[in-house]
Length: 294
Image (cartoon, rainbow, N blue to C red; front, side):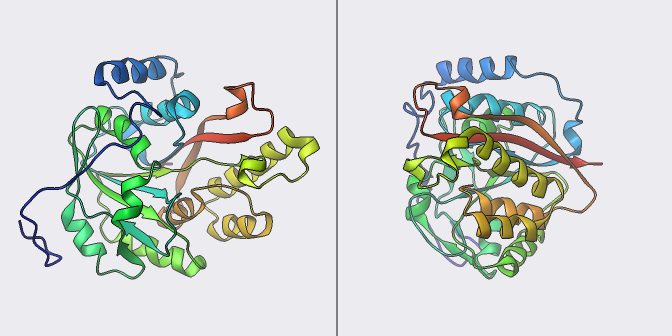
């Protein structure tokens, strides 16, 4: 098979599942039951699915963040989506820029999702984009979104992008401009990110005697920048505080990508301490956020 990038591959390559059976159900019957349970608990949102252009969704194990993820995905049920730009952070392998994989499909317990090779080939020519197969092969931030995506949009193509470290706002805006060239009206952008990671495991413990209040302050400030589509404010906040938002750069790219006339809706917010009570030293925050036309 020939691709526009000029490379040829005879065998179609699929990225296998890495976290199924541990972070979420591997059996499709049990997984379907798990996701349906999450969706059944979601309160109705007064948002039109066709107006939603982007989501921010958490990516922890489903026992922790599955409920919040369901809040995000339920608001786009019924939306016509042919392609999804899926961006998340690289947790395990460091690199600069934005990385695409060298595969044709992503596996899910519900079946495969195809990769839009034409967009990947085009992005290959853009500044700050590179191939990084090793990072994709072990990363959970994208994989945790795949079962939800396959269930709701079974025929959608993926543009899977892992975001490494970025140097400044100019790089963020350059990358956003490159992605924007290939966005179509029926595309959906999904950003995979958790919010404040607090505790010794994450080397982030400012004012530990007021842990819950401090976490809420960080998360509220972060959301305020998202609500205002303030790329500069978000990046400055990150630099000044060292706040541990794992998807800070994918979120910044999204804010640079969106038009100014956008409605931002917080669909869900809680922390891991609301789920698990036996780890008082650590907390991870989960938000589900929708971006829609005003």
